[in-house]
Image (cartoon, rainbow, N blue to C red):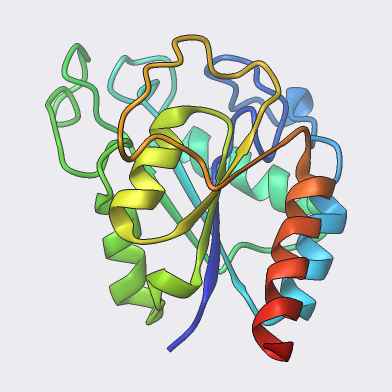
Length: 188
């Protein structure tokens, strides 16, 4: 079984520009490239998990999203092991994506699908995101969670699955938390 780092796209891995799939406007967040190198060196799979309601809302296509992911990987100098995205939104106008689903965070559907596809042991994995829906999805899946407190969360609706295990300002600090936990597990 593998362990993974699940990471959100917008506001977490890249700067948060609403519905951004334009390769020319994609900018990595502080520490993203460094994060990729260290996570890989520690043997984690890197899995992108992201809600992309812009597909259901008709703002961009699945092909546009895939082009954006390629641009992100190029900018980071790393390739994700897997990319899981939820194209659904119940208020969307584009069929068949205009519906409720079990993959849209805060539901854990993408994590469970990734665990099967990539043989991931969720209890040994982490979710890094910038909103509490990310934390809830990760916790419901059984992962440890790290919230990037960078202004992405605006509602702060708390609940039993929404309390992050750690809160950090950027991916440098998230990487440090993960490395400290790996060291603790190895030497305890």
